[in-house]
Image (cartoon, rainbow, N blue to C red; front, side, top):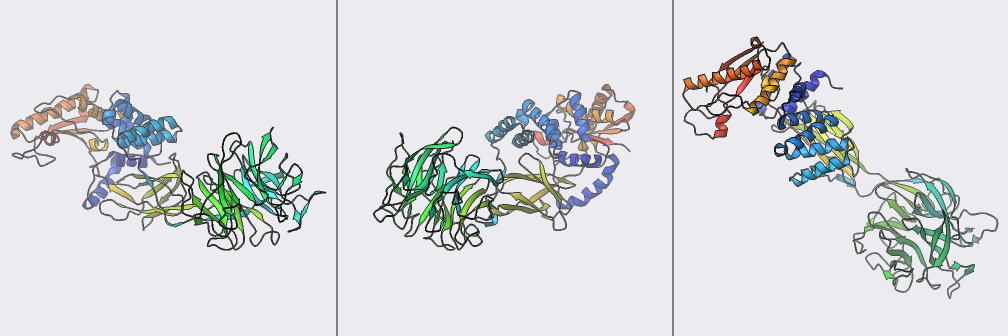
Length: 635
């Protein structure tokens, strides 16, 4: 928790808005040494009392909102930003809609946050979210872990089924189970296992119903509602097996539907199968209107190609379409999978790779045509066969099959949990915006999308910071330092590992003279009309701040200085300014402040704030800057 003095000082930084050059740094340091004399003056508390007294302005709401926002008190920030937008919409700069939106978001008020963000954008605001591009990024880095349901036999071909994983396994060694001659293992059946949020599998059991037979079943795919399965099986249905002209039992695609909670029945063969060629490894498009598969049917370019058919009404299908030479080679393409981001993953041994089947990916356009093909590289691929890749990209997690070195048997396949390793390093330096000098000792915060602090650092001599972050998430980087206005940058991290650089330029703020109460309270100038000394309504709002401070701190004794512009002769301006000073004093006395705590004097045109001296042509706005009052704390 910040000390009282820290809160006051941070408030002073927020409320001050005028920059100074590098040459003014020594003045800043000197002023801050004297600041402690009046550190007990809590400007925010004064503002709150002013509002209690019924005086409000856009500037008061802005400053209150900012002091809470930069201290991560979003509940109070949201309160004052909302009042600002509601009561003073014409005086609300666009960036305050953004801060209001972020404050509401941190409180979980999604609808209100969206309302303010929409207003921010409609008023021309840039959302300020840097779509960061990582440097030195890795194309696709994953870590692999064998799943617990692997057996001493072949396990492969995973598929998502609701909150379960379904896969093929030859682990059925029950009495009467058939043995495949080519590998002397039991025939494959489909199994299901529970899948937790971290991808761990448990409670494996044979898929219930009519799907599994004495022959091979493998590589399923399911509709999103979980009620339909497409799967691969030997040419076997209704207790009969079929062979091609060479006496070979080919693979076919079948479809089944779920009855009750988890019983699969109504197994039917798809109409584009044939006993003369294989059709296998189904995958559904995102809209489930197209079924992809692998086949060596007539028209195949190589040993096996990727194909698709359109799924029509009434359980009918279009003609098979070959994906063409952009995907298929003279070798084997197989095991297609369509991800939630409409990327096609498949395996091929006809492209440059690490050996055997390698896993590749390619984005599909809305018409289903593939784009650039990328080899996933190590460790997803090895010198052996790697295939059956599936993934939930939003979770950066999936599964694959491989018979790479280290499998339990010399040729057995195993299933691996795939976790994409995506690490972002957010780094940068903190420096003076004008002089470009580094600023050691500055504090840098990393906040999440709800403005919760994730990490913080005080930068050292190099003024550099570094945070570890997640991919594809929104963060805010916030920098602050004594004597400087806070700085914030919002960014969306990229979807590839790497480094994102966010520099933090801090603006040196103009220090208040140690005894200038008006400056400490960010008093707006108390202007007077030309040739007048009455207190205008806008001036009364500013005087209410002085009034609240003097009520809060009875020990304060204030000297009021009033000034005029250069128009009129010197003597007249001295008289006019003195009337303005006395008018200001009387307003405070009328509100209950003892006259003994106040002195007032007019200084005429002798202390101009700009070039507008006698004979210099200036605008009315420039002249008005000189018609002002100041409030000096007396020692």
